[in-house]
Length: 265
Image 1 (cartoon, one colour):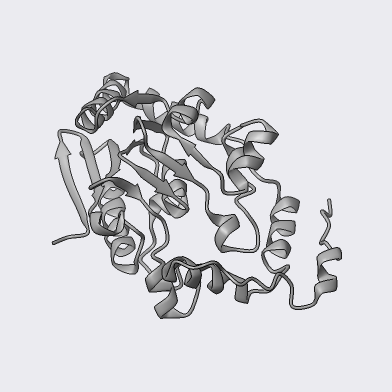
Image 2: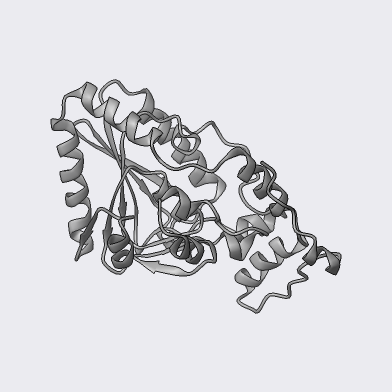
């Protein structure tokens, strides 16, 4: 059974993550197959709009913790084929159809889409603060949300689909999972009614107008990613997998707590 399923509806390409027993967690296999699907979509002369969804009760639970522990390295350490969706080079619109949990890396997949439909009760979480030495500082900023909301996101609080709809992060809500794909298809079909050049040009313009992190902020973020005991990254994953409380160190040198890297313009 393939861990990524695809289907076509005319010019619409549906990509469905298919590891329901693990809430579609991102292991090496699923990332390889997603890369293949996104490359097929990008290279097609017939397909113009993609719908991205998951099988089962989760859209995507993010990083596969068991695989990370087996590899002895956090995050996605194995090489994959270049992925135009993840690298931001895909020049066609993508609609997320969020069927359930979108956590960590799963949230980041939703974030990369252009339009979003979610079933009521779907849960979102930016998990970086729980797994790394720096929380997801950029996500609320990119979404153009107020500072307190962006901070809540960065600190790993959970959000419901209903709240994200109120905040403008989700475009449409549906009451039942059966209505999710049909609603996403409606949005895709609308896009296809537009003059092709208008659709392509407008999408390109809208993407260029999204807020972004400055180079100086990226430099600071890189420093903060290394400001602390790196062993805590794997400890957080081990504790999660073993369903126990983590034993964090914080800093190898306790005095580093008070030696914060600074933003340099």
